[in-house]
Image (cartoon, rainbow, N blue to C red; front, side, top):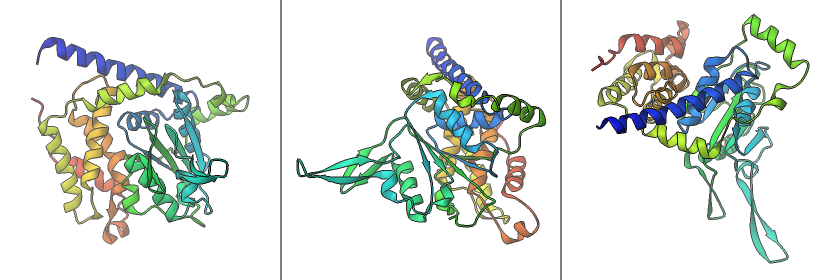
Length: 325
């Protein structure tokens, strides 16, 4: 490979790193003390994935979603999931126009660059399935006609794991459609004090200005896709996935889709770090948000108090890391 081409690639990933930093800093104007969560959200956006945010009420799940959407000058739709939400409310519906005597398609809430789905586990399984089909195929089919969704396209869904009355938990196959899952957690004391000082005067979302646009995001996504992942790194990803399938601590391990999502996330993480190649460190750092929500502990592991997070940490510590060349 010529030196000129390497420099061009380095310059490309430099642009990814700069824009990603601007988006992350923009989010942190609203969500204080959660730099890693903001970084993961940006990583998922650039890796063409979808993000699931699970945590207790009041820690900023929806605020994070809106801050990401505001930071990118893109079309945004917020959908509040409720038990009576219909699949057609998401996808759209054909309406008969009496003037021209033809059916016209009226797009639903899914037609936006960034779709914020609040409390996804409050909708019926049928509506959840409609959303997840759109996420997978990036298109909507109504009455035999197919309508492509906007590009870039990202779903940021939130769910509350505590208040389970009247909710429908996402099945494992549907959780697998989300590239990553993060939990906000409670903020550090200093960050909470800063939030109390600033958020009581005004809503910081109102002052948030876009730091990039969809055209630039589309370019960055193509750059991320071109980041190099060596064969040794790919073998490492497969070894991690196989280890989750082989351990007796898990009833369900990582799927091949999970391996693919982990590679894509690692590429985005490398580009955000200013590199045009993936390191095992990128894989390890993204393994937790990408894999944990896909793992189902065995009964014995659950009774012993072992969480998917702990089991994955053990696997990461035992699977050999490829040596640098």
